[in-house]
Image (cartoon, rainbow, N blue to C red; front, side, top):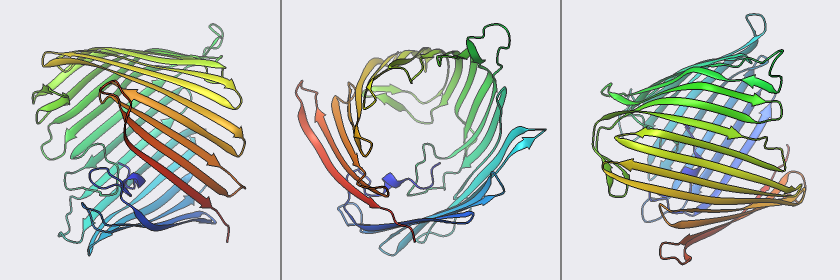
Length: 396
């Protein structure tokens, strides 16, 4: 759960742009405390009134590694007030059990709407403990988000859930033999167990077994994994147009393999293959990235993704092709050009970004987005956006 997600501002419920009238942001640090304030006013449109978004955050460093903090995210519109307010903290030490790392932390968030009575179950929390060390890594967490919890300026991938997560990684380093291997990676188990909060029924389950993996001293990475997954559908699920999976609880098994070379080379490659059962059928997926560092000023990245799904309810396959060009004319003038096409929506998305730093402390951004419809074999312009942004930083 991300309690404050900036992309909620400037878009209406249909994900269409809403004009921003004005906004201000203030950041600062005084001794061990960091403060942040922001307020933005958006204009009225057909779906929503003029709305003010105001956010305040505070973080205080405790000791050498630990922190405590608080944040409040507020939305004001036509006399109605919504707030998402929470606290968080993390205790960290590098001296646990004679020099080991240990992290313990958590967060608690509450939402409230002025046009409703106070709802005790409109909360969410997360607690975790981590043992992040070189040869042995252990992490466990628990989080809950009842159905009544509804943050309106947040990013929440799931609702109405209770989740329990744990993972163990063993990463020994060879001492005498196989010296070309820097470190092995074995995962006895990674478990994610998620329930519907209101009924306690299974929402999803995943168990991952890292059978074998290693990093080489030259920067290559290899791994082979096995997964058991489950999804509890409480209603029919349209996974693809005209392909509907009926309401039920489904279990399946799959395998995956990963390989990547050192990304600092002139030419580097990373690829992932996964295959096996999927709901009531089978699936195959491949993701491949190829990076060419042509010069110190110019990089070209090629991306390809293939998904093949075969189900009794219907089969489908999708392709995604993308390129990213990154360039730096000078240390103060640089940018990127991104092109991405996918067969599922038959859309080509082109994004151009330029950043200029006239002097340290100031930034100028120019961003151009253009989407083309390719369904009929032509490049028909669908929608486009041009954005400019100027940042000036000063110290008081």
